[in-house]
Image (cartoon, rainbow, N blue to C red):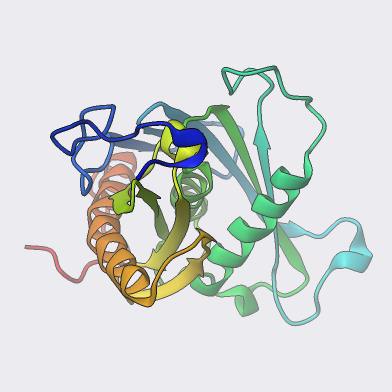
Length: 251
């Protein structure tokens, strides 16, 4: 069984076209505090994905009528640069997909933030996809959480995400652009790793109940590894200064 357009995505020995096993994640590297002019920032390289995030705030909300009397206003803008994809250069004008992903990212991050601590203020999160190769929304969520922590935004936990795909009838961890384009399904999942709470679960394609359970299990295990990379990036940034969250589980 092959994916969309009958493109073969697995080799005869069951490995993916980039050489990975079905449960193998691409190389991940996160760096915190990369922009001096932002209150917080992060850069992620995840496979061929390259994503930069800048955070500004908390600050007085403008325009003022958007201010919320009892909580912080979190605004996220996800944008793919015109040269971020191999295909025809995309317009710099925000697409419907970018607007939708911006909303998804905001909703995935909000449960981790103590929004009530800063009423009538706003925090702006700018996400720039420099190079895209599948699973950019979960990579953006992962990087944005690090940037928010770098900005000193009060959080009960970080948020990390990963995509589970379905290729040739089998679940695959951390799908790339080719697998996203020609596979049979994509399930972005984000969690607060220490608390174990899911903040994002979407599905594009058909998944059985058993596959959803298996996908959540695969994601939970991978997100713990991603969480360690997030914490490493923040620890490196602050030269060993203890973090308020995530201390549990250290050996």
